[in-house]
Amino acid sequence: PPYFESFDQNQGMAVYRSRIPAGKEAVLSYEFFHDYGHVFVDGKLVKTVDRRVEYKADQKSFTIPARSKESELEIWVEAMGHINYSITMETDRKGLYGKVLLDGQPIEDWTVTPIPLDVPTISDAKAAPADGMPGGIFRSEFKLDQVEDTFIDMSKFTKGTLYINGINLGRYWNIGPQLRLYCPASVLKKGSN
Image (cartoon, rainbow, N blue to C red):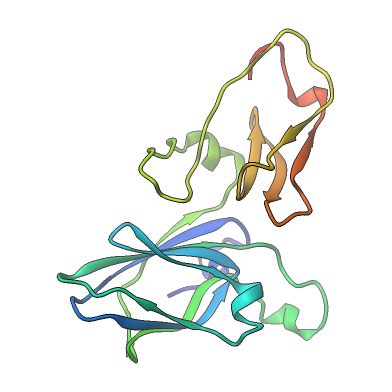
């Protein structure tokens, strides 16, 4: 599969999809998974991959369940920033790339849906259905009688990026350090936000 930069994206997310054959429990292995993401088989979460953890343990494989029919493998990958020191800056690509194997056999015929997480992509995206998936784009509306500088408490959420009125306020993650994001009054408006 191609890394982000090969389709002109150096940040955000991408969804990688391919078909895998029916079969018994199998080992999925990968060469590069940068940086964080979720692996689904037929819409069911089978693994969350976190580069910080897997690469320290040199663990680049995991087991996926048996499949009674050909199944869809769907891998959501999030880029979490680029290395900004040493010669590794030259090779720090984002996404799922290199060899991806199922029990030692290459998985091919990937389709990739880039999600750059820029304002037009977020503004035009449809809200995620409430189907138990661990991610998606979620929308909410709140009304204000007055506007002031404030903080948005994201401590009950897991991981993501917060936009208000088309402005990216930043990333949050329940492991910290960002659990509350500063929101200046200039981002807010009286009435619906």
